[in-house]
Length: 535
Image (cartoon, rainbow, N blue to C red; front, side, top):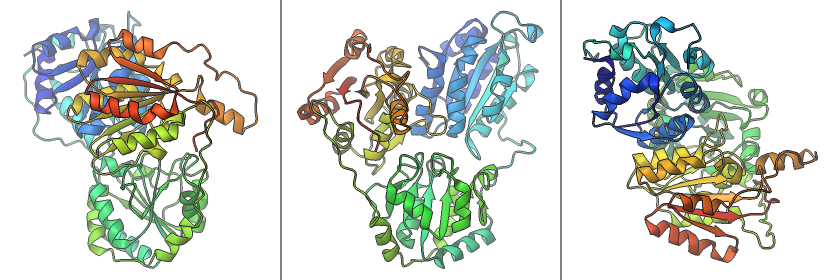
């Protein structure tokens, strides 16, 4: 059997039914095998979008995303998407074409060392050297991508190897020396953590994206309801607990809530669950361990102690560790502590600018209209924090963004990938006028795939986040204005998609209702003031 046919058989063994990609000469044998298979190929308009779409697909289906590109520029166009997936721990397997094995290292046409390029920000990579190893490598790639701390794995395929005849012998299990993720947390450490929490006067839980990745929302909710311990979350931890829970204090960090940051600063014990404690969440993480006892649960031992010392480290799968903790945890008396935190809750008044739409009101209105199964993707910039702060998360709602890498242009391809993987759920993509112009060509993919997301563009004629930072630093605005933006609605209509430009605040609810009820892809451009801030 040709190796390219074996690849397809391996994908079917892994129950892969959708791949995202862009063909080229160095990967055409694989494409011929895909053509003859039942696997659905999604042709993106640029390779970076293949990774972002695979990310949106993986994050909302629980499957491993798969994408394919050719050698040279096809492979290097994947780099930003791979780094984005790596920083947010998204399970993706990437196949790239490579020049003939006999020509590797000679700088021939469209040759690039893609395994070397991605080495700093990929979970693992393979350059195929012996075609007979290929089934084992694919099995290992999927295993590595989905287990432990998830992440992207790349397989680079020389084009001559793709036509080599090999036996299809797909391994039933994987045994990789040196790669043995710890699933069960140490019971002694867990008991120490429980004792410390129960003896604390000001305990606090801080959750990150690891709770989503570990599918541990139910276990977390049970623990919080049973213990009465309040919770804050990082940007990537948004949605780990329903917004309406009385114990959910909201997001911490530079764009978080004052009272949530205050609680983090004044807690005497902090339990971090699946959180990296990065600089955007805690400006100076090292000072936390000077004021509080730190318990840190993470499946990746490298993250524990990286940013702040952990008095009680617990390495293990978040879901498994929380199951054990839930058997041991008892109710704490935290009513007074929570009231003290909420007393520091500052209300920020929404300033109404004449003839301008308030983006926070748009998201709040949208939140009230969407059902509990909706998927929302946000891009990077002010639109991200307007969405993350004002979209209520309840039921099975999911909200996706590029948190660790902050990649503009993420939202549209991610929302397309999510819509392809979830035909029965309403999907909404949010972006700014800057980020939309980094990926709007993916509208072609959207139309070709017959998916029906709602797309919301906040147009403030500039790179709003950078402009806001410049204003806070009291420097002159420079390089952030987009006064010559195109007619976005006209561009979108050129793809055959209904598009509307809204500048009347009184029409916001009506137009959102119509979009949700339409059952078709909808593009809504809201004109907002350049004075609107993220908070």
